Amino acid sequence: MREILGFIVMIQGVMGFVGQVFFDGAWGLLPHWFDLPTAAYVGLFAAGAALAVWGDAAKKRKQRQAGAV
Image 1 (cartoon, rainbow, N blue to C red):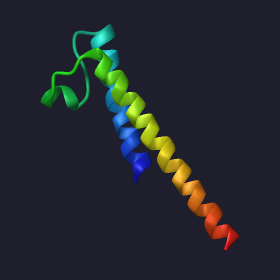
Image 2: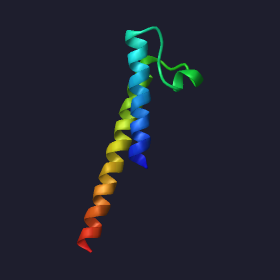
Image 3: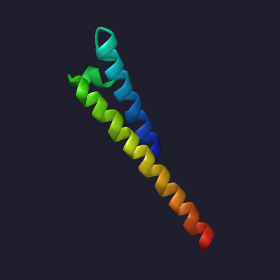
Image 4: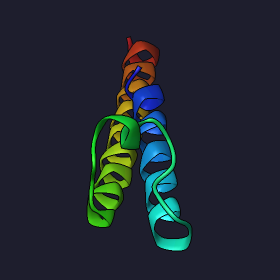
């Protein structure tokens, strides 16, 4: 579940950053609710990447533990 949430957060971060830097305004769902600066979208991408990596590592750890038992 963490991987999916992380992937969604990463997409929102990229869309917000690209929209603000290269176009008129941020894209995605977050600009409809929040007025975030460009650096916040980079932080969202980083947080999403961290969630995705954490979820993937947990899944691999669980598979290794199941295989060892």
